[in-house]
Amino acid sequence: MANSPRTYAEKLALLKQLQEEIQADRTNQLDSIVKEFTVALESNGFSLQEGADSLARLVPGRGRTAARRSNAASRVSKERAYTIGVKYRNPDGPEEWVPKGRGALPKWVRARIDGLSHDQSVAEFNRLANR
Image (cartoon, rainbow, N blue to C red; front, side, top):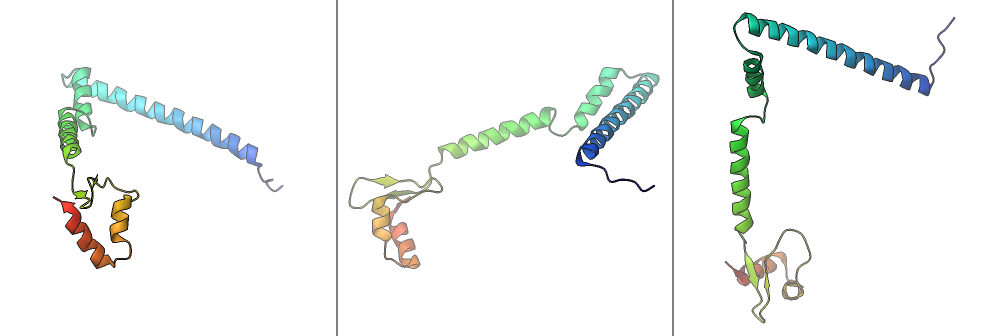
């Protein structure tokens, strides 16, 4: 007798069962490794805490070096927060513009570069820049 094809629901049930079995096997395997590790530590005169501390040093992002890295990164971002960049000043009025990434150009900037070629608009931006 040929195997009848499984329905979608049957396949989902089988998948769930297999995932549960895999998780149980994984847990059992890990428990076995931890027991062996504990026995090896104790037979060599080390405490469980010393073994745990030793393992924690192997985990990326843990310990003192990560704290140093994160502090250094926060210092850099704070320094960047205070840098303004280039200011563009309207020669015909009191307006200033500091570009902050994407977005529309102010009306006075758009009016000055409309109809100019790329090279001419770059030259106009350089002329307006108050560095």
